Length: 202
Ligand code: ATP
Image 1 (cartoon, rainbow, N blue to C red):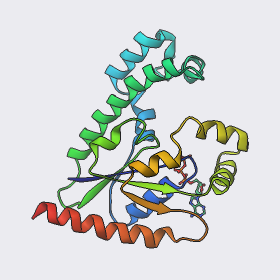
Image 2 (image 1 turned 60 degrees about the vertical axis):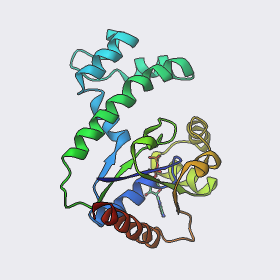
Image 3 (image 1 turned 135 degrees about the vertical axis):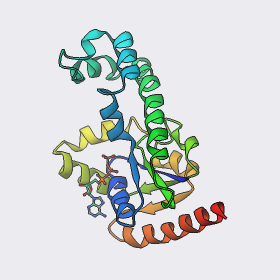
Image 4 (image 1 turned 120 degrees about the vertical axis):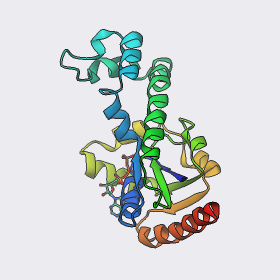
């Protein structure tokens, strides 16, 4: 199966773009949503988290103790790296399982991940899309969506690679500002991926 990775900074609109691909019948694996799900489902991952961060990482009913984990990894690069080293491979396993369940009729799949380039999961896809938008538009969108301050959004942005870095790594681009139509850009890329996938199957 031909695999396309899609990423973009906070508020760039990558999830919105993925919804357009879904309308075209392309299945999307939402890595960040799956990561949250498997932290309470994947036994291997749960054991790893308990061993690394303590049994108190989970409540008795099996729910994740977010506050405990956050208190350890917040502003601590080394501890955050330990958490990522546990979660990322588990997400890769979940992605592989998801891929094998996709019908052979599907031309290609999309993997959406905020940290596609930071987590090296871009190496597991065949090509990548970067969604970009001007900083002020991204800030306004996330402030409106999450009800947080622009400062809080900026602090989250600082933890990701800059667009300048990601532009060097991406293969395709979607500009999601107020002047470009994302539908037209998605349709153009869809054509490219269909052609590539068909040629690969010939
Ligand atoms: P995050 O990384 O924070 O999850 P994201 O890149 O997935 O963000 P979205 O959730 O798709 O971004 O978009 C952020 C907000 O901006 C959402 O509320 C979405 O509805 C809105 N939005 C995205 N693109 C557009 C657009 N072209 N026009 C208007 N609103 C938009």
